[in-house]
Amino acid sequence: MKRKKVFNLFQINLILLVSFAVLSIPIIIVFAYIVDLHLYLDEVNIILIAALITTIASISGTVYLILTREKTERTVKASYTKEYSTLLVISSFGVLGIGILFIYLNGPLSSVPYIVIPLFIFTYTILFFAGEKYFNVNLLRK
Image (cartoon, rainbow, N blue to C red):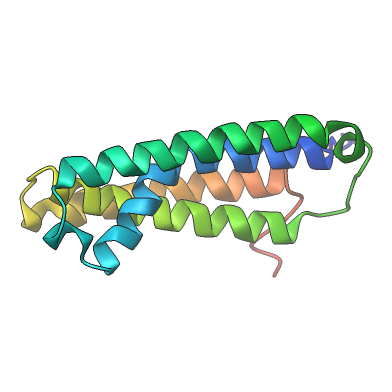
C-alpha cells in the first residue's frame, strides 16, 4: 500500500502564493470591471496598475514566506480545506478575470464563453487533482 506524502504549511502557502501571483492581474481586473474603472481610465493603465499591485503583493508575500519559513515548515495538518477553498476562490476569480481581460484587449464579446468555459473546466480538473495530492481534500467524498 502506497503512503500519501504529507505536505507542510510552508509548501501549501507557497502553492497559494504562486497561484495568486500568476492570477492576480486578472483578479484585480475583475474588481476594476465591477467598479467601472474602465470608464475613467484606459485599459492599458488599468493593466499597468494591476501589474504594479501584483509586483508589490508578490514581493511582500515572498518576504512573508521567508520570514515565517521556520515555523510553517514544522506545521502539518491532516487536510488543508481552508487553504484549498482559498485556492478555489483565487482560481475562479482568475479565470473570470482572463475573460474580462479578453474583452479589454478588444476581443469579440461573442467568443468570451468559448474561452472561459474550457478554461474553467481545465482549471477545475487541475484543482481536483491538486486537492487530492497536495491539500488532502477529496471533492467527491464531501
